[in-house]
Length: 355
Ligand SMILES: C=C1C[C@]23C[C@H]1CC[C@H]2[C@]1(C)CCC[C@@](C)(C(=O)O)[C@H]1[C@@H]3C(=O)O
Ligand SMILES: O=C(O)CCC(=O)C(=O)O
Ligand SMILES: [Fe+2]
Image 1 (cartoon, rainbow, N blue to C red):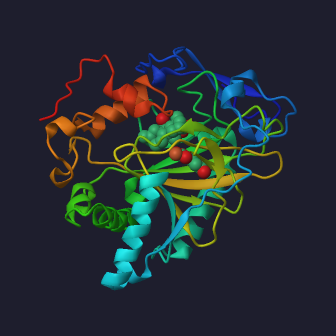
Image 2 (image 1 turned 180 degrees about the vertical axis):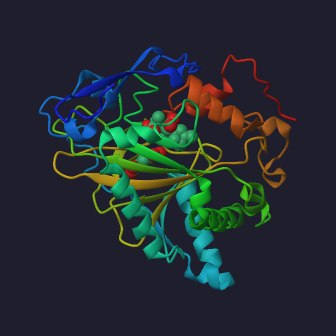
Image 3 (image 1 turned 30 degrees about the horizontal axis):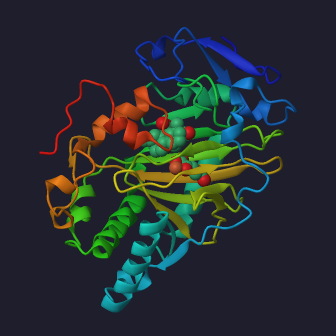
């Protein structure tokens, strides 16, 4: 096999290591013998993008989308970190306001060393600049939450996202994990439950850190960097560079979440309730984002806190474990706006219970 030709659009390769891939959903890639590898560093300059990257009209950004900005609350964490009760209450109220509406907010004075963010970005840059043959050495294995992927072509065959991703397991992500736990404390305060409840629940969490590289696209109106979806996870901390692209569907409109210097974007995932969002691409500028997804430990049972329940009959959803939901999105379902509902309604031999 030859990955060296810079003039070839696609590389086909026999993929012995993808043998046990067992996707069943509509657009999952069932062709195990011959996965196509896309070289986005070549495709970015092409006037016509391959059909695999073209999304159905209803999914595509329209010219009136995102003219408006999302009113994303800016939560200042300074007082909370100092232990100032009054300022903590104000921060928790802002979190509550955002989470009862669309679930997105910015945090500033978040305590993450800017040099660390800079360093992570430099590593990410040098990785994505490598020749495709080198990047493929880190190609993700089916079902794995680490490694490199060019447009998820090893998993899906159509409506491919216009991006390359690199997933790194949580070892490298201590600063993000720490911040997630602080925000979990604020979330608990905002819900009026024991402030340590979620902190304790997530302290042994298994998280996913993902670097996204969105090359420029000559036909940005036909493609999407990340299609509309809800994060199936628990909490997402997103660092976006200075190029806009993130949009949230709120009040029946796509609204832009423009980058705010020194801030991190936070959004709650489906184990709380995630809002539909996506990342669009553009003709001129590459865009990079780093998403840290907090997830519960695999076997932990996810259930609502007792204080929030009036009785079992008020429950909308049964208990589940993160490993069940993760398995569902990795093998059976491509995350979209109905992931959680379809997971709950799934006809699979997995037990669901209210116990
Ligand atoms: C558990 C996960 C699945 C995805 C990565 C994390 C959290 C969000 C999911 C995702 C980003 C939602 C959009 C579609 C997806 C396929 C993607 O474009 O990357 C999703 C991720 C995935 O299934 O790998
Ligand atoms: O890159 C972005 O701005 C958003 C990506 C995203 O929503 C995701 O990876 O879940
Ligand atoms: Fe997302």
